[in-house]
Image 1 (cartoon, rainbow, N blue to C red):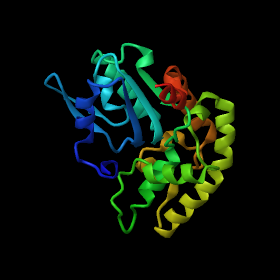
Image 2: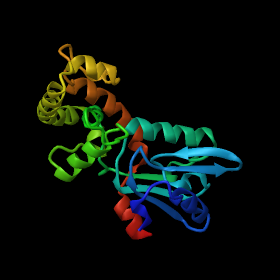
Image 3: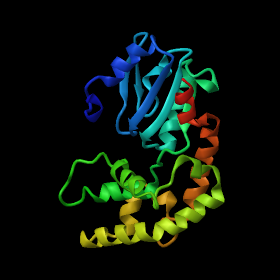
Image 4: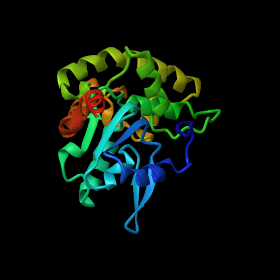
Length: 225
């Protein structure tokens, strides 16, 4: 029941229980959620990694419906290593089927707060969930491993995304290129102010390469356990 709520201490409970079990599983949420833990007197913040990552020798699995911001995930992995955790590659397994938050999701999310604000965090969560449920417009983690295929998928997806973004910004009398630059997405744009499939695929393919050592068949791992 408590999975439906935030700010209720689930991460702290999971951290305590992690010492008594072999596998800790993160099955939902995204970079706007997570846990703040006290580890040996030090504050430790997690958004995507399971709370068991700070307990040595445990298997941590990310699967189900966790929305992945690759940059955020990589930063957490590096931070875990920096603090002496995640010493073994096999301590972390990430499902290849998890939905990826892309730059246009962030744009869609921020646009939804124009005019009548709905209180979004602006991290692309809602639009990424919508695409994942719709399936045909969703990019998943395994897609990041092949740059050419990723670019091809993006070229199919982007025209529809551009149309939606154009309509919403025009209805608010906002210059698209200027607004996208203002919200920090300029590096993904072409000279006309549209999202560039090649630029996105190059960066996210690099993210994929760095995450590749941790990608695993999490369903099989859990079935075996």
